Length: 84
Image: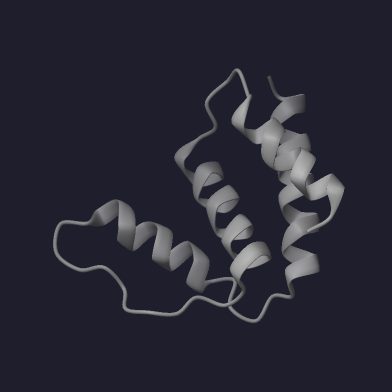
């Protein structure tokens, strides 16, 4: 993890305006891809709609290099900060 990425993670937690659900899923999936790589495990089923949405968002990034996910995360946090 780069220092710039770690700083963006901290900044994302201190946003004054709550991001949209779509942006929250992007932040989650980019963070997971950057820190853990490709998703593994089974997709949540039943009434776990939040878990399924998170799984799907992360699944969509399969194959993305960690460095690319870090840069996309940093860019998204900067965009969210600018829109506050």
